[in-house]
Length: 409
Picture 1 (cartoon, rainbow, N blue to C red):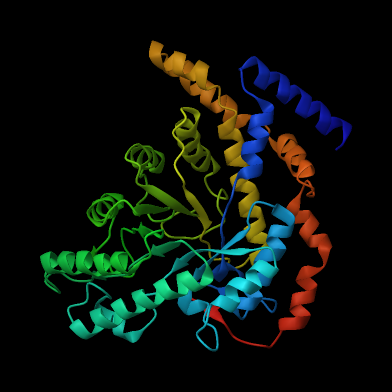
Picture 2: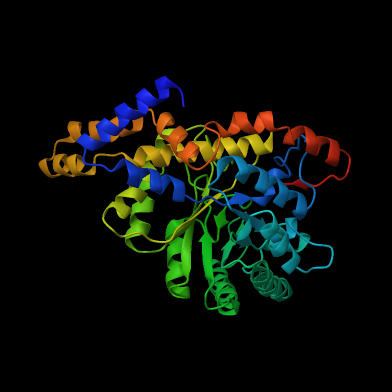
């Protein structure tokens, strides 16, 4: 650490002490942060209009594990890889070797996601589809995903359904709701007793008139009907412009129904940009709610996953930057002067309450994070360290021309 960085950290330690905050406890929280890496983000990804191919992109699930292990090597807080089963197929349909290979690389498999939007049979939906044969084949896929989850050693399944309608009158909305409830109940019932189901929502796309799980309220309704092991999954890009995501987080936390996140950032809708790249203040405010709950001793188990589409930036670099941005937001939330904030809120002092919150947001926590990484045996800047490591050049030589794996955006 440079003399200037040491000076900055000493100053921050003094500020925290004046606020009654414990620097050692804050460091420990940062070291214990866990973010799941998305297997699909290290492959070629793009939009419906096309894909800019990366010659070093992962082609197989084994490549994806290698890439995620390389990311973990530099960031130190991403020991799990989330999986999308139809993008992570194995030649023989067996997944215990996937678990074993991940473990050999110091990784484990995180949340497993069924895929109900990549086949021609899903034109009118999956479990909400008016045709019984499609609904039945979807349920078979769900049960197979439970098997895959079990073999991979995971304990969580994340479900996003693309089901919806494009035109008024296209289908009976009451019946679609009933099919949805029955289909998810079948999946929930097939899961092992120690597995958790995360139910994601999205206001539109690919359907543009109705979406069957359109918002957090519908997801919460379904989870409440399913049972205690069903929780809401919040994708930061799955909201209409102007929605107050941090308020949704507070409500779900209070109801003990927040299961996890798909972390990304957006300007318009489901842009799947690097988390914290467009609106870092929103990310901080979300973490402010999460740490508020923890500050009062009510810590719920929450799964944090990245879910991004790296269209023009190198995928591994984009993921590393996203992890760093998330660490920054978390660190700033941890240094909020909660005692002073509560006092001003009780007094109804709008100006000072806002100022206390923004003081934390405007604090430069990079020296703190650099020290945390040093104490973890990591480089202070994971992105620059990765660039110096030579891995990007190695995978280009190894993988160039070996496949055309492309993931839709």
